[in-house]
Length: 218
Image 1: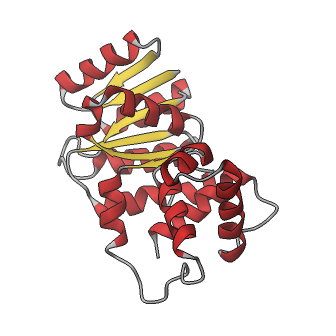
Image 2 (image 1 turned 60 degrees about the vertical axis):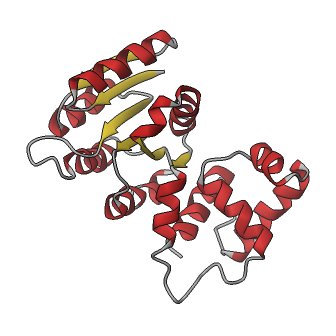
């Protein structure tokens, strides 16, 4: 994959460059601020970008805002955000870009980088258009449930399947986790799409993204 990295911490940035290069990926740009990220995405059209939430000058949400701007300038460009902490409002802002652009969004805690296989797997899934969220991010987003729950019609098993979809799991991976057949998972997924009234003319992948967004905003 062709990758852009944006992180103002030189050690982490260079560490990511070395890690990705060792695993056969090409780092086309490694930058330290949000403006440079947007410029790199527009110039290189990478397969995926890895972006730190907090970058200069204020070290608050510059990376997130730059990621949103990059997806505005290059619609659907895959972005994997890394953060030291769970920032629920930042995750919401990023997810707002996912529904119309067909996914390609990830939000992981930086601790996940240490689990190399897990990090690389998440990066690949985001590059392929998936939505990958850290379990801790999901748990904190779900704390903010509204009274009007659009998921009320789902069965407990369908909720389990949807929660695993939110982690970016494939149907096969969900089947292994729940110890059921692939066919059973496919049936649950179809039921979820129907009960959430997701448009049948959309692609299956896009419907998965919309279902996950409904889950996180419920």
